Length: 330
Image 1 (cartoon, rainbow, N blue to C red):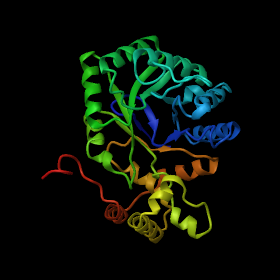
Image 2 (cartoon, rainbow, N blue to C red):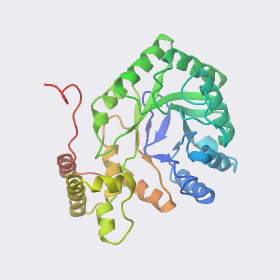
Image 3 (cartoon, helix red, strand yellow):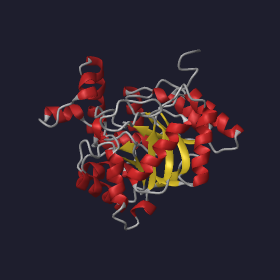
Image 4 (cartoon, helix red, strand yellow):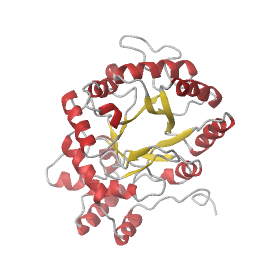
């Protein structure tokens, strides 16, 4: 396993992040435990979740599955860098949404941390991430709440998710005025087919020393060899991938991608992950396996060395927007 520092911190994390969003909704508890065991066995130590995962009436279920895995002992919690998130409304089953049960008020942050710690069966969260921007709560209040949690030892680091560049700047300038470390990571949508983060989010993250943690590295399966799988009678595209492939220009782009990788004898999904590992500022992409086999496939991306010829070909198929302001100005 390859490791790197998380942004400007001294924390060492694996260059792949185990995403757990499928644990519960698509992957049962025993299989989820097997995947986490296999991840640790491979040296993957960075696990990502969120309080809302499980979704709907089962929100919180994913954290519970991770907590029951920690409870098995064997050093599982000690070996894991645990990241979770706060923002979504977590009112219980049968409860109608109630004020202050969501977003980033000091009250909800306090409530959400305690609930996550209980579900996760741990006394601390290594990386506590703001799942979305809360435009109604000032960063002074957010950092006051986080500072208390850090002093209590319940949270070690704070990160953001889905933040625009200017909010990363606002958050860390406010933290600096309080003498705090501030955000150390940004989890954003970033992959070969969706590169808008390169305009401002990633430059802001690098300027402020945040590690970039891309989510949806295969763009909902679009970069995982979806056309070839369809032609071979395998799993058909669904959801966002199916909608995207209905666009003839997108389908032609994905076909060119698959043809290029076929020429080089490479698997599409593994290559998409390996490409992200070459990008400046990226700590590691989040992989969300539903099965142990999918995890092993993702791990192979760490061993891929992408040639300059291939990187040039990928750039021609999926050109990035470029950094701002050049992306939209002279």
